[in-house]
Image (cartoon, rainbow, N blue to C red; front, side):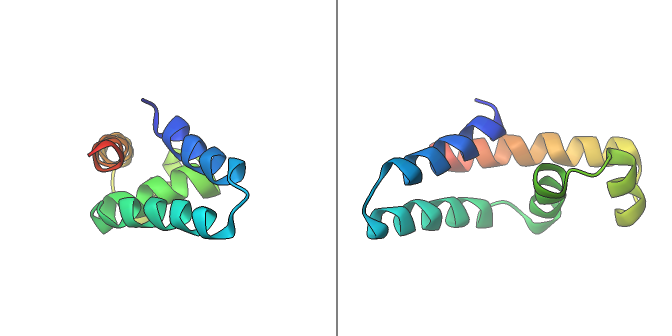
Length: 86
């Protein structure tokens, strides 16, 4: 499952729930799942999905090769998927 779908599904699940407590639990689950990912991957994934700069910009900012950024994004998605499902 694509990382965008996982996050979107979690957010949609929260939106469908009228109960504030249930919404808080959904957000908490998403935050806890993201915390399970090592910071180096989480940061790159966050910038890629939220800030949406070009990969070259992320590479320059992190002072790593573009290939490294792409690899970290791929790994972060895989780790997030595993943590969400597991």
